[in-house]
Image (tube, rainbow, N blue to C red):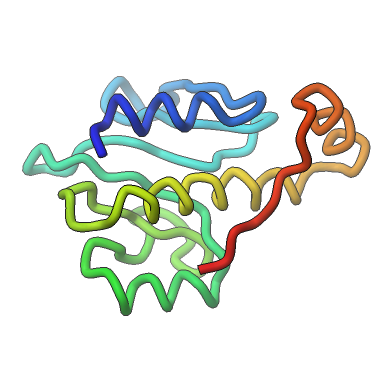
Amino acid sequence: MQVTEIRERLLAKPEAVEDFPFGPEVAVFRLHGKMFALLGLDNNGTPRINLKCDPEESLILRDLFPAVIPGYHMNKKHWNTVILDGSLPVREVQRMIDNSWFLVFTGLKRSMRERLEARSGQKPEYTPF
């Protein structure tokens, strides 16, 4: 999955916005001010994405996929870094992106979640591994 495709998927999430608070090399994607993804390059130029993850699932993903490691500069219990080297199935990367957004969505106030659901016309769901 190419970085441009990942960025498009991140921005396609309801009410997702992109900003660069850490400088031009790291894009941060937020839902109502709360981060759900950080996209950038490592020192070798390999793209990486930090995604929020269920704590139990994050451990399973790290065991199954060498390209999934504890979140770089993040709370390692709740965040994974995914090295985008082509070794992960595209569907899995997409699922992790969707779930990261969903976890932030569930942390919003109920009234905000209801407004977001009404505007988007869909009820978000978590897709377990």
